[in-house]
Image 1: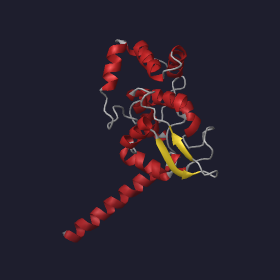
Image 2: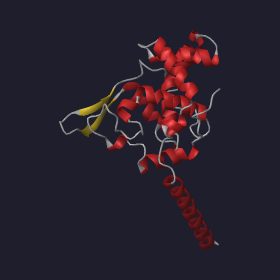
Image 3: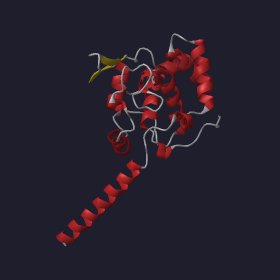
Image 4: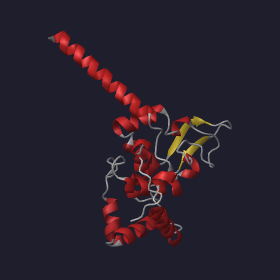
Length: 208
């Protein structure tokens, strides 16, 4: 009986590993911006940024006020109470959150992290392999346990200096965005990073 159970368990584990491998191999990383972003979200956020060019946080609160109602005070208070360790959004089931996160990413992260989330943004002196969210390791982590959202939130909020040494001897630094972006903006950007193209829903022509 013990041998039979051991054999059955080995087969089950093997099948699970094969399934996981096929799943990971079949997705290349975060959804393409052109697919993830709903035009209505990008247009709305851009309009708010034009109204508040010095404060992306205020722009986001204004955008949220227009789309969801309430008051700026309530929105700001609720945002301040959001967890710094647990993402309130589900990247695999909430295409609206993915879209809004992709909008935030495009506006505030793309210049360094790149159009394809591969660390090849125009502001980078040279690409950093660990910034490439299409690598097998990043895809495996996102598939298995949604990546490292707690660490990502901390790095985005507090800033981060890469251990990678550029050819000129410098190290690339990510500025602390905690005073610039709302907590929900950071979580939305992380939601986009957690999204996988295997879950993509083409929202390019969608609207509210």
